[in-house]
Length: 234
Ligand SMILES: [Fe+2]
Image (cartoon, rainbow, N blue to C red; front, side):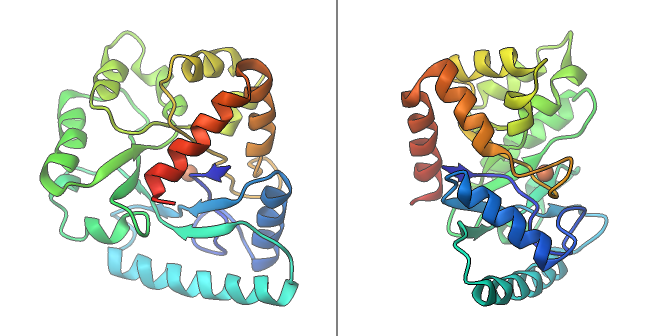
């Protein structure tokens, strides 16, 4: 399986704090049968230029690569990306290309944690129209409560961009039913652990796969895997 959303690069953001922690996160994922992980450190326009972000990501990744080589452990393949937090003007931001998931025209987009207005939704649509880049909507599950009483989620889904949900949504006792419903309805394209550490935000996608397989069947897991590979051109 492919983990589309993760924060295991050391010292990049509020995710992994060290190469040791990163290695543990990678090993845990590998043991769960995760073959590829997209590394998606947070990108906030107010904190970093894209150039500085890429510089930091390169440094972090090369430190991790050394640690992986030294450890001789088997770990998933790594694809570099970013989790880009929505900002006004994103659809005509000059450096947006630099933040795509490597080797693709995809951008993992984190939406605002508030009720979206028309301007926000129009601009998300404009990202694709203006740049040809396809936003992958990061953890749709985390915005649902904010959009209650509006047709915002339907509007977003109508745009047809790939949708990612988090493993905690599937694994959580109180949210599982809704997660399975969305997967069954074909709303979900890809999955992510959104792992940050080995404590409260663990690389737990393997657990979700077991639940999805049990509730929806192995074909459903396979379809998500195929879709993930297709999006990444693997
Ligand atoms: Fe994230």
